[in-house]
Amino acid sequence: MRFTRSRTLLAAAGLTLAGALSACGNAGGSDSESTDVNVEENAADSFEDGTRMKELAQDGKITIGVKYDQPGIGFKGAADDAPTGLDPEMGRILAASLGIDDQDITWKETISDNREPFLQKGEVDLVIASYSITDERRQIVGQAGPYYVTGQQLLVKKGSDIKGPDDVKGKSVCSVTGSTSLEQIEAKGAKARGFDTYSECRDQLLDGSVDAATTDGAILLGYAAEDPDNLEVVGPTFSEERYGIGYSKDSPEMCQWIVDTLKKAEDDGTWDKAFEATLGKSGVDTPTPPEMDACPSS
Amino acid sequence: MDWLADGYGLVLRAFLLTIELGVVAGVFSMLLGVLLAAARVGPVAVLAKAAATYVLVFRNTPLLMVFVFVFVALPKVDIPQLSFFAKGVLALTLYTSAFVCEAVRSGVNSVPLGQAEAARAVGLTFGQTMQEVVLPQAMRAALPPLASVLIALMKNTSVAAAFGLIEATARMRFFTNDNADVRTVIFLVFAIGYVVIVELMSAGAFTLERRWRVAR
Image (tube, rainbow over all chains, first blue to last red; front, side, top):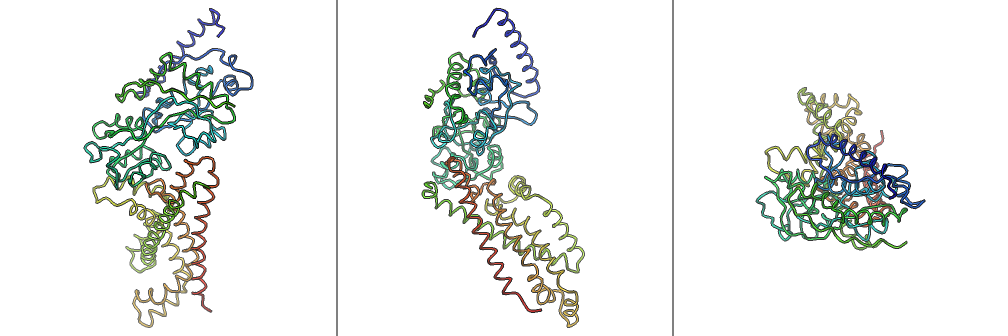
């Protein structure tokens, strides 16, 4: 960055203002803490012409698809202005590197089913929605990362007979229709009960219609943290989910930018802070950020 | 088409559940619908009012709301838990029977009043009049709208996909999620499955229509 002294001062003033603004915005939400990210000044200059990053930086706005129903990962309550969680934090870090402020990020709810279509049709620029990296998905969209690694676990009512993945045979287990989690638990002999959202699964679990709910441990920890008297996460993880950031195959140049930006955030401690402010609240220790995959050469 | 080769058992099982839901809910809807129609056209004012209210409520409620009621609200009431299949059948039956009632009622109304009057004149009771004279003629007239209602029911079973029942539409979402590169093909295969089921139903209805046809 070619910072002059006055520009640095200006940037500092801008940041203070942004901090003050976000502090106001946060006053209404219950636990919408978020980390401070340094919004780059003149970010557009640092990208080559013709790249999607340059376009986004010049437009000064970006649309990011996140989940709205996963506490700790991506969650937006009815009264909240913006979603909170690890995924939106990653989005804010990436947007900041393009010089885009929080208020210029358009959040869009994505569910498991519409993540690829949203990227393909350009309805969102990035998908950061507990989006596990798989070979099949990488054939049609780009996935950079992983920025977080978790694994499938089980959420049960306190005192349940189910202590781990070996106890689910013949039991009703809820997850989101179409998810790999539900397929994996079906393969273990459980009766698969598919609903549209994880919060519906939690409700089905609480009223006794299903015996357990299953998906990535990170998501389940979020629910258990919300209702620690009734719910608990049991058993070891029985899969490895590597969360990646989805981008359109039309802009392969975005991969290296995502990896570089996240690497920087991991090195300077922003990643740790983002984790502590979100998933870390459920009591888990902040893990070492995972090693990221190399970008496909093209 | 690897996904279909590997997973055709799952596809068939899913369509089997779709058909089971449609058939079981169809039988219950017909039973309840005919009873409701009899109540609506019958001479007992209280029953007629009750049946009319039932139709008013369930014909004007979106099916999704009925499902939410059965799957989310009902389990909170202190009654024995129903299985997921039973809850799906219950939701579909509550909704569809209102339409069956109206289709049957339209059939009953198409039978000239003189028929019922003649039946009463030869000494048949109300029950006999309905069973022996009015309903056989009414069912013939009600057949085309009834076929539409039951076909709609078969397709409406897909709402259950979001309520713990892995029928065809739910299974399709597993395949599209795992094989995102061939979404369109998967969608077409499942759409063809529904078309086949519905075509069989309309062929059946058409055969009945021809068999019941009489010279007037």
